[in-house]
Image 1 (cartoon, one colour):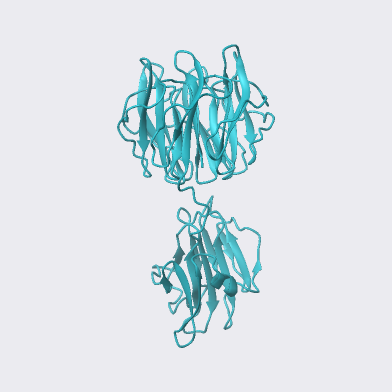
Image 2 (image 1 turned 90 degrees about the horizontal axis):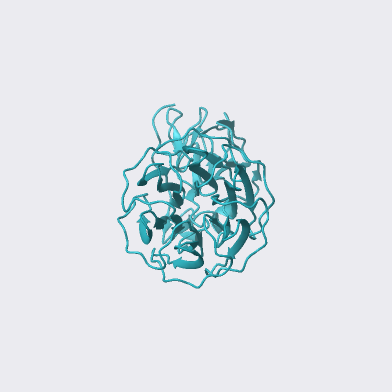
Length: 439
């Protein structure tokens, strides 16, 4: 096959799908995506197990969840078909924009075009229903809409908390969904530094671990969906400082790595969607501390950089079930005491840190498949021991510092991963703090 069919016939209005009668009049309308109209059309379909292969052969009467997280998929249609034969394909992981599907019509026509054309669908969240008509027009897509009503993070807020201002503190600073940092909120819980934080439950957060005035800690503090920090929850798992944390699976979190003083570890602890921290999971990857982590691909995570005895730039991916992978060779400047956050809805960014000689403002973007890019020239004050979090669902913020004295300045990250110049600091200047999102 060669070429690409570019014509798709959809009738839309005000975000609706219109179902037409034989004389063109509108019979029904429903919301975009898997609407009532789509559900009516899908009646009688036998849905199959999730398909993850690079190739597959479709059978009339079936519906297929196509997961292209790891690879694109070429789908071969039946070699013969009868009027009314129906097949549905749906983007299981909302990843067709990265790895799409190609439909091979296997000798039959597709929307009137012969089998010399490729039929490609390359939009995240798409659902395609095709029905066979006759030899002239062949397979016709009755619905090829994008599922727009996926969970939205629009309006997401953030919170910076704890740290060292010259003494240990537990104060917090809320971040609005426009990236504005609020003045101090009185501290709750044990004051400590070199802790980590992550979102969980899609709208809440958790601070955990660190070092208090006397020892390394494993205590955690939950953050409500209004940004209220709770009192200490007793430690679960190995007490340590300098870990990192990120969300995974869309509603869960993970703390990983750290230093038990004096031992560096790669231990991880999963956080359920109700904020319950699990016991230790044996470490995978190079033991280190003072690293960073963020979400990518909407449901996966990545740990990166840190101090393993010397600075490293290696990374470890986290699957959407919370499994930490072995080391990926490092990209970019090796450094510790950096920060990371998500941006663009499905990508991430590592930024700032200490390269062993000096503070830097270098950043490294993370693609929606977890690939770390080479260094981007730094913007804003070079510093380390800062924190970062996502806000408004597709943007990020780096904030605070410990380099040449403590600071409270922030740098916003656009939804395309561009870091802005310094914003004057608000709140108590400090370093070695943590940050996460909530809503």
